[in-house]
Amino acid sequence: MKLNTIGPADGAKQERRRVGRGIGSGFGKTAGRGHKGQHARSGGYHKVGFEGGQMPLQRRIPKRGFRSALAPRVAEVQLGLLESAAIAGVVDLEALRLRRLVRGKPAAVKVILGGELTQAITVKGLRVSAGARAVIEQAGGTVEA
Image 1 (cartoon, rainbow, N blue to C red):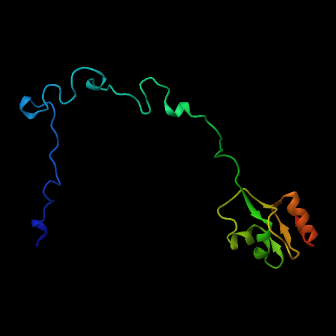
Image 2: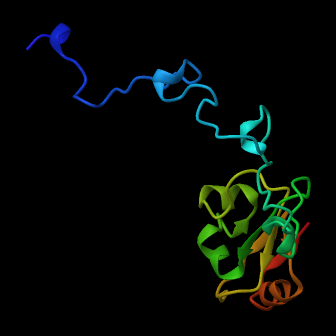
Image 3: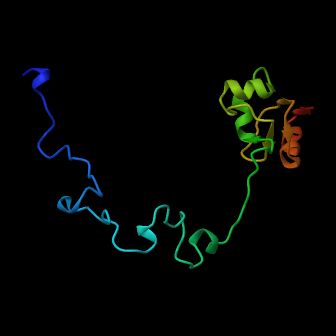
């Protein structure tokens, strides 16, 4: 077999339909558009989502919710995960990144109540919820701004 002898399979390639080329082509005169009406006119067709005057679906369904692309993204970390991220008893943004608890570049990181804390840790430069702060201080740890 040679590359110059290979061709497409039978029926794989179809000729382009040439409309408006006389009565013998089968697509002469009206060029397959029928007689009159919106579809027969040039530029005459409805817009996307148009339902013939009926209230379109995208307007019938109630709208809800909005998430601003400009709002700062605050990552949340559960309290129970902090022990594994602590480096020499200190948890900061860099330690959370090393343990892949925080990905990307969030505007801030907030520690929320969830899980248990068994050892004293120091939390630096992170936001802390009131419940999480109480558990950290109860375990003998501190929260630094």
